[in-house]
Structure formats: structure tokens, C-alpha cells
Image (cartoon, rainbow, N blue to C red; front, side, top):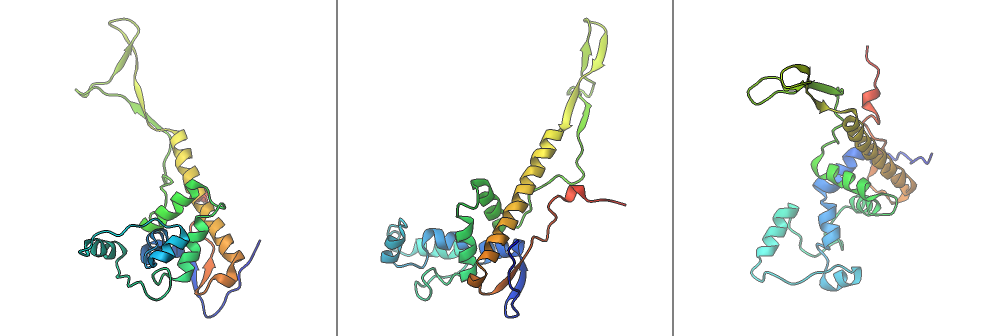
Length: 207
């Protein structure tokens, strides 16, 4: 497995916290994808579509509110975005990640919410009730019930699906970590650590 050098001048950070920093603090997707801070000819060179709108500055106010900062079009070409955040975002856009990987990583980065793997969930069925509170019955004939109807509250298929999504999120994080380790010389400020979350937390031994 590729390893990264732990450098004293860089800060230790889990890959989860790095992704959150990239999208919540650095707003990498907004800055890089929209070419915020680039001059028109720079956007043309990068193939970024743009148009001049809102001569009264309304759009500028809206954009500043969206980014949480004011972009002055000076300094670094990509609106002062930290090079590590730009590297993370550009890596996530590469062929190493599927569309689902990409969506899981960026959504996590923006919200900080780990995919729900349904802790403690078990398949569950229960009796079905009518609106009046009485059991729904199955009749062998018009008068004699032979069984109570049931409804599935939680299926094993649903639990398995949610946990596959969680596992794919974890694997995408670890894939990003591996890609960053391979590009260790490009990372300026962080010693990127393995995911802090467990890959299969539902398999933890208890007792």
C-alpha cells in the first residue's frame, strides 16, 4: 500500500475532515466549477461558460453571500482557494471515482452527514390495522377469519441497501486518501489520515 510522509510542518487531518473543509470552508465546487475569481479570458481558456449580468451589482451580492466571502479577482487564479482544496476537488472529478462516489463525497463534504447505515435496525413485520384500529383479517370465507394481515416495517433488503451505500461512501473516502498519498508532494498543508469511521460498524463485536 502506498504510504505518505508525515511532515512536521503539515497538520494531521482525517480524510473525512479534509473533505468537509474542502466543501464547507473552501467552497471548492463553487469556486472551481464556476471559475469564480477568474478574469473573462481565463474562463475562456478553461472552457467555463459565463455571461455578464446584473450591472447594478445584485449578482455580485448574491455570489458573495453564496460563497461567504468577497472575491476581488486578484491573487491566485481560482479566487484564493487553498491548493489542497483544489487538489481534492479535482481528484474527486477524475475517472477514479464513479458518479455515485462523487455524489456521496461532495454531499458529505457540504453537509457533514454520514450516510445512514441504520444502526440497530432489524427486519420487522407487524400486524396490519384498519383506520378504526381493528386488525385487518384474511377470511377463508365471508364469516371466518383465518389469519391477520401483516405489513413490512423494515425489510432486510432495505437494510442491506443502506449499508451498501455507507460502505461505498467509506471506500470512496479511502480511495481519495490513497490518491492523495500518491500525490504527497502536491499536498502542502495536511498529513492526510485514513478514515476515522469504521468501514462496517454494524459488525462490531459487543460484550
